[in-house]
Image (cartoon, rainbow, N blue to C red; front, side, top):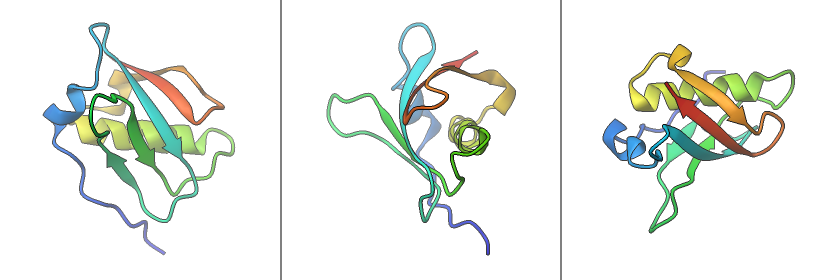
Length: 95
């Protein structure tokens, strides 16, 4: 069965959620029915990322970095998970 993917937000809108150090906060929902990157509303800067991957053996983290990289129009190698490898709340550095 193919993964369902929602359209990604504009890369410039995603970049607005980065701080001055190139860090971006995300909240992950693994085992979702669709893959999606959702922009927060209001002053909240935390992106919501839903992935169909399971949180076993780092699969969800890999899927999240891949989705975020696609949303930013960057290669996955330009992203690094700084904090939250086993948490729903993660901090990613864009290099």
